[in-house]
Length: 393
Image (cartoon, rainbow, N blue to C red; front, side, top):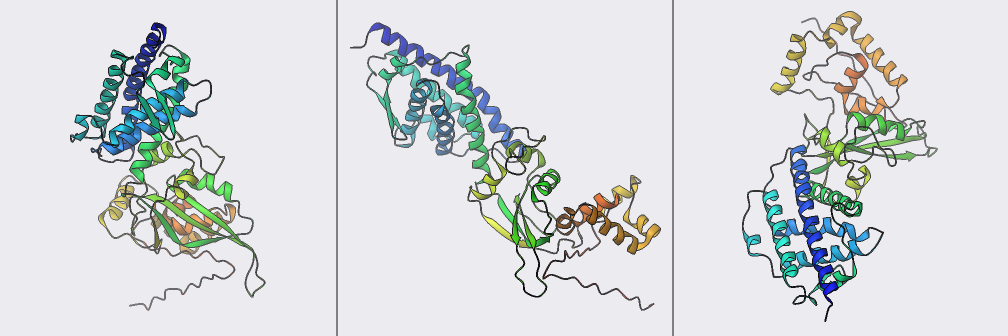
């Protein structure tokens, strides 16, 4: 028979755990809304299974916190209760349809509070009720052996911070792997010089194109005719679906929230949250990859391409046509080659993002309706330009 002191300790811990659950809801709710807003996604109800997994991921994060058994016991209780919902005993309201995921999250937190309140009402009656999760088991009575912190105790936030971070991680991974996003692989690759500094290039390139990731493979000289040491650079990007005129990149603000680095071990100032290393998102999530082989400099013929040019002209911005009239196309080519020579990292971006890179080098607006073909020569890749001959007609 438990002592009165044991009963009071269990009741105090259950009260503190209810406060913890309420705090998780209050501050987890905006994280869900933020993810959908940054990705410009519509927030809809995803069913009980998703919300249970989200909350389990969140609560289980505190089981790994060092400093005592309180987090491990509480995580087991929270997750054990949630586990019973998916194994056949869900609260009645979890069978309803909600307006969105946030509404279901609120209902689930209230249901969890009710369950804790039930144990609080008569701890002795539920003393041997057990909770099992991830191979670990504890009982209501085991809560007499710990001191779960109150919100005024700094230890409360030692447990809460990783829970909210894990919740944030789960919702982003859930959205991005839900089927509406792909990894676009851009072909062909780009041949870079043997002196190419991939880390430096990543810092620069990801700053301008935050939804991208790249691989760099060293190719040693085989000794065959025309071969030499070089690197092969391949670009990928996190995309809603790429096409001829766009790469479908997710918004820059979403990238800055999602990625914790540019290159491994290289955090960046634009990072606002940093949920995952960039490499992990592209290599460990199992997202579908679509290879896209396109003429990167193909002209854009839709209305938006013309609108951008007309807006620039109306705003009296410097235009490529004006620069051509001043120095000729040969002069423009010379400026581009000089820009690439001064910054070899631009060899890749001039081919895969020609207009943006030309505008960076030349300082003028480059019309979308013009076509540009850039060939980055390598040991076994050559370019030949056949000049246009005006027959005078």
